[in-house]
Length: 396
Image (cartoon, rainbow, N blue to C red; front, side, top):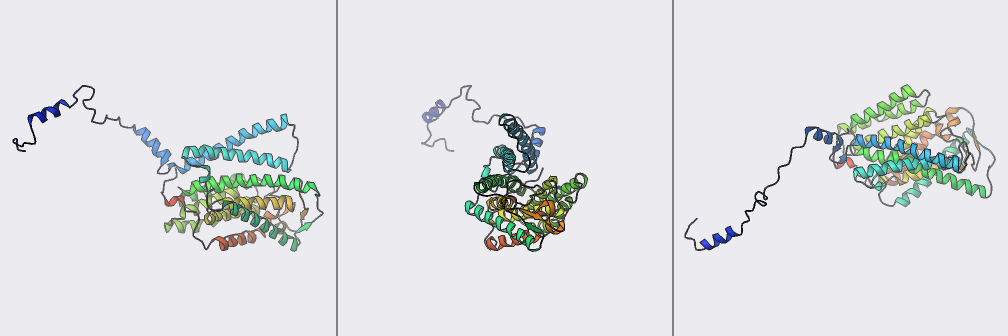
């Protein structure tokens, strides 16, 4: 720099110096305040709890299951006190009012748990596979499909002589009354069971599961059946666990972007069969059919973009077999049904106390439902993009 530069004068230097604040309060203010390093224990805890997409999948699933059980217990105790002690409600058995009460408790517990997790994960309830286009239409189409599929099963059983029709058991206003109550009950069933398994659990597992975790979870359910389920229903869980082994392994080896979804579908479908082993009167066919239709529901979410088709199908299937045809439902014999039917012949064909879901004929009906779903929606691009394509957090 040339000291003779006319653009720099002693006056300008003095002005700059006079405008510089050198008070003790401002000295060093332009430098960031040193931050104490985060303790190693805190860093390890954060890494264990949180991944690129927030709370890790393993913790999310565990919290959801725990909160669901706690809230169902809490709501159940409150409802029992209100209904039994205050309203003096004394109905017993598989009646529509009892069913509505039980489903309200179940749905409230699941919704409460999902709401708490949505706050922790910073999501909306609808994010859990409840968005997507034409939700109302998908619900209605699913409901129609559920009624038709169950009717086809009942028709096949009657044609083969494995189901006998009796007299109509309701008339007049009672048909509408019981039909509406059973309809409400099974709509809540669809919301609760699909909301927990195909909405929260399927969505959450998809964003972070891998093949080895899926294998471990299905194997754990099979081992639980081996030790705690002392009837033939456990074989339905074993079969569903085995069916996913090779297809999911191939997707894993090919590093398919859709692998996370199908591995989650394998786990949740097996889980859906597993939880039905607690029902009385279930056969291995009934357990396997529950798991298989659970897989069909996963496919419906993949191709429609939401769980509303599955909710409609689930509700209408249960309503048709319980109220309209009056058959047993997962071992429960309903009260207040329109038609009267009774199983006949070998349990393998008739389903026996398990109802139509326990007949071997349910397997081709489920397969035909899957084919129809793919024919109607499968030619279009997948409506649901797997969350695992965004990031690949590890399951804790």
